[in-house]
Amino acid sequence: MKTIDMNQALRLCKEAETMPQKQRGKLRDTRLMELACYARNHSPYFKKAYKNIGESFTLSQLPPTNKKQLMKDYEAWVTDPRIRYEDVFSYIESPEGGRELYLESYTAITTSGTTGNPMPMVRDPYHNTIHGALTKTRLLRQTDPDLMTPVKHKIAAAVFLDPHVSSYSSLLRMKQAYPGYESNVLELPINGDIADLVRMLDDFQPDLVTGYPSVMGALANAQRDGRMDISPQAIACSAEVLTEKVYQALHQTFGCPVLNNYCSTEGGEAAMSCPAGKLHVNDDWVIIEPVDEKGNPAREGEWSAGVYVTDLTNYVQPVIRYYMEDKVKIHSRPCSCGITLPVMEILGRTTENLMVGGVEVLGINVEYSLMYVEGVYSLQLVQTGDTEFEIRMVPESEETRLTAFEQAREIMLRFFKDNGCPQVNIRLSEKPPVHSEKGGKVKFIVKELDRR
Ligand SMILES: [Zn+2]
Image 1 (cartoon, rainbow, N blue to C red):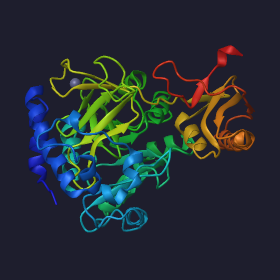
Image 2 (cartoon, helix red, strand yellow; image 1 turned 90 degrees about the vertical axis):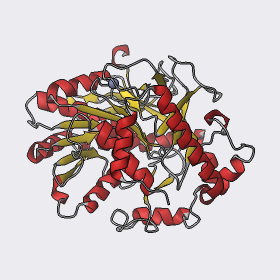
Image 3 (tube, rainbow, N blue to C red; image 1 turned 180 degrees about the vertical axis):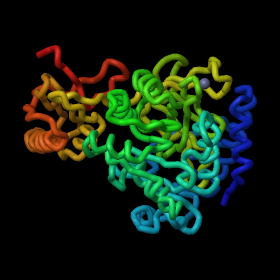
C-alpha cells in the first residue's frame, strides 16, 4: 500500500505551487504514469480499459470513464480485492466508521447522490496525507494551518443533519477522531430556522465557520443587522459556487479571510482559493480537463460542458479521466498572488435565498426538501409574488404529474410554515422548468416577481 510522510507531502505541495507550469507538468506526467500502470496491474476494470495502451502514453490517450461504467462492476474497479461494495456501506454506516479504518487500512465516504445510486469512495493513506497537506498549505495559507483541528480551535459547520450527506458525515468523523474535544465542534442544522442558527453561532463564538455559500450570505446579513456578533479567523465555503457577491459580503462583514474550495467525493480537493480570491487548480495532484459535449478539449476561455477529473493520489480506487458535469473555464495567465497553479472559474449551481412575506429562507434548504419528491425528472419552484408560488416539472410520466405536485406542495407548505413564513399559495404550472441562460442548467428556484 502506497504511503507518504506528512512532512514530505507538505514540502511537495509547497514547492510545486510556484514552480514554472512546464516543470510541474513533468511532475504530473510521472505521477500519472505511475498511477495508470498501477491501476492496469491491480484493477480488472482498468486492465480491460487500457488493454490497447502501450508502455508510454499521454493523458489524452487513456479512455475516459464515468460513474455508470465504474458502478457496473464496482469490485472490478478497486485495486484491493478484499473491498466489497456492500461492506463499504456497512462500514460507513457503522458506529466504528470514523474511529477505525476500513480493512485496517482505508477511510471511506460516499457520494450523497441526488441522481442514481450513491457511490462509495475508498481512500488510502497516500490520498489522505496528500489531501491533508494540500488543505494545510494551500486552503489555509492565509490563516493557522491547524484551524481545522478541534484541539486548538472551535469549528462551526452549517450542514444538513443527514448522515448520508458527506459534509455531515465528515464532521461526525472529525468529532470521533478527537475524543475529549467534541465540544469544540458545533454542527449547525441548516434545515432548521435561521434565527436559531444565528443564536447558536453567537453563543458558540467559533474560530472557523464552514458551510454552503448560500447559508453564509444569510449569516452575513445577521452579523450586519447586529443579530449576531462573532469574530471568526476564517470562513470556509464549499459545495456550491461562491459568487463574487457573497464573497464580498462575507469579506466586508466579517473582515477575515474567506476560503473556498472545489472538491468532489470522487476526485478530492481539486482547487483552492488564494488571497486574491481566485480558485487555483491543484494540478500537481488533481488534473481537471475541461471538455465539450463530445469529450474533446474545450477551447481556452470558453465554458466547458463538463470535466474529466484525475486524482493522482488514490491508488486503491483509481479515478482517472472520470467525467463530471461541472462547467468550468481554466486560464493559464498569471494571478496577482504569485502562485503559478492555473486559475479556474466554475459555473455550477447557485441557489438564491427566498424572501417570503419578509422572512428569509435558505434556497439550499428548499432544494434539499424537494430532493426526495418522487416521480419527477426535474422540478422548479417559481416565486411569482410575495407569497405566490408555482411548481414547474418534468414528471417521469403523466400519471405521476399530479401525485408529485401534491407531494412537493405539501413539503413546501410545511417547510414555509416551519420557517415562520405567512400562508403561501402554490399552484401547478403547465410550463416545464426554465433553463438558465448561462450554461443551460435548470435552477431549482426561479423568481418571476416582476411578471405578475
Ligand atoms: Zn491567486
